[in-house]
Length: 490
Image 1 (tube, helix red, strand yellow):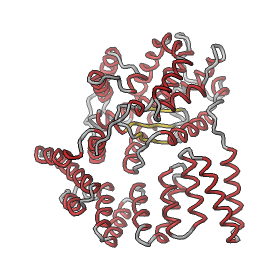
Image 2 (cartoon, one colour):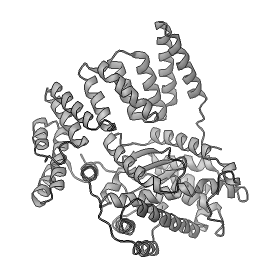
Image 3 (cartoon, helix red, strand yellow):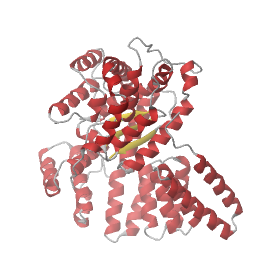
Image 4 (cartoon, rainbow, N blue to C red):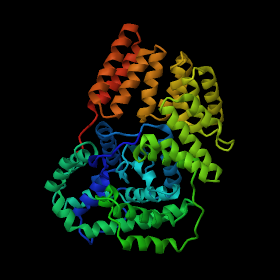
């Protein structure tokens, strides 16, 4: 069903609003653009460890205050793009965290400490993966320049930055009170932001140049950057309020021209429009644009109009997706069975087919099919989560527990994994593990009080069971969690 995105839901280019616009208001136009070296005064004031800590605190607060897309297929798609770009960027710390905001507006952001996110709505504006990658390369460039640390360094010589107030305002913008958020920004930083807008634009050009290098070195089409900029300008022309990305990353004709001129130095490369890109773009249309009653007819028209087999398969998948969520399971399965051999083994298809078979009462067939898919792709995070969920729902949780527990060790900061581990452990009657996993889920989603309560349940249960070794580990984790810093102040 299409949902209307409220004004307050336009994410806030959070540290782009902070770092790349609001904080840059504190710097003079003549400030050096040289990268800080490890051990210099900037690194001493705000170390990468501090940036890492700040980013995780901020992410927990964001998850507590705004809707996110908790879908492994979507998250793994963004991860794959970043991990293709990151080795060719100047970012030194690759301990990234990813988040997808449930908003239809055009936006992306990077927060100190390697927090990278997009609005789901970016799929509505990008024509291909290269265009999305151009935005992500730009964000990696902001991180690599360590703008945040450099701004804090300059604040010694300028008026101190009211960082906690600023972050709090931006979090309000991210959740459900945009007007209050903007009011907070007006009261703290608006005047200096306006005075230094020219330097903000200069930093944007710097990030464009660095991002272009990352695109080229990653083997992607450098011409994707100016074409994505054009998409942003078009989005601005046809909306009453500029997209959040344009408010925090003002794009001018000069920037578009500069990006196009830089791209001319390189050959045009074939763009990528993978099956996963197509189905995620279509999910965004289903979620934000298409009225529910028109969705199936829309994709049927597209299916009849194209001769491209990849596109045909993506439309068949989307029809199955719509039918599944409308509980029309036989029709969903019919659509899935028409997908060609080229894409029938894609994780998204395997998962939806298994979910559909399960709803049709064919759980054994569903689990067996998903297990085959997992053997084919043992590193597939989406398949691992879906298989654990399916087995847990069909009295096979004990057989699924060890695998999903290994994934929690592999992805210890992923709330999706911890939530699934909690459900699987509960179904397997391993209550200590279930409480512990639920605690980690609550903690990562900004619900610290609930997290501590779950840990106390686990400790109490471990005491009753005489599991003194587990009890000791749980008490240590409780101490860590209780003492964890939650303030955004330095």
